Length: 298
Image 1: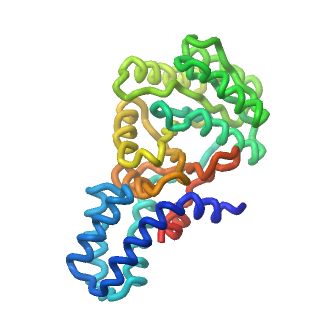
Image 2: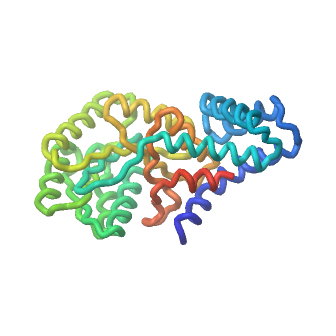
């Protein structure tokens, strides 16, 4: 299945909710203040967020009036242009090698599965990959990551449950340097953002990475569950206070009508969405394409 088709299928629920509601509004004919107020509510219902929805609609109203837009197709065209500009304003990530990717996020968002899919993605690009089982806090986390390592035929560095996570990372870096690994992917414990001690451990891991692997390109990706909607924004804020987030991996996009949260993320944080989960399979993690995403929304 092609990338475009996968994204389209993943966004099906969001698209159905958004398109149906917008078309219903446009069927009333006049683009008056009531229409724009109702459109704000539609965007909020798709988890674009209150602030972002209001700002988007204000800009849409101004452009439509200035360009004398009178029909539904014209409104959708202007809305697409506005959304695409938001994504263009976010920084872009071009992966350089060797690199170390640290994966963070709260419990239950699918970090371990995401790491397995990332390993599969980079291996499909003919890159050598090593996984680091840095989640020594959760029972069975290491064994779950090991299953993905076996499934994707990827090396894994792990210690016993309860071991010092920073020590596992230290060994993973040593292995990656010795074997000239292209991509080192580090799992971390699913941290509740209220657990300050666990956040401090994350800072310790980053200190080890910066000290022991200075020559590598470093990326920290936060994994977010698309079905949580606006809660994803508070998770970004909490983690970004402790570690500098470089990009976002959005999982379960295929299981929600709340795909509009991507717009809210870009609008508020200007953080690039790097990958999106489009299904359950190992290959169902796709590089995010903003233009494709916006086109598939309507």
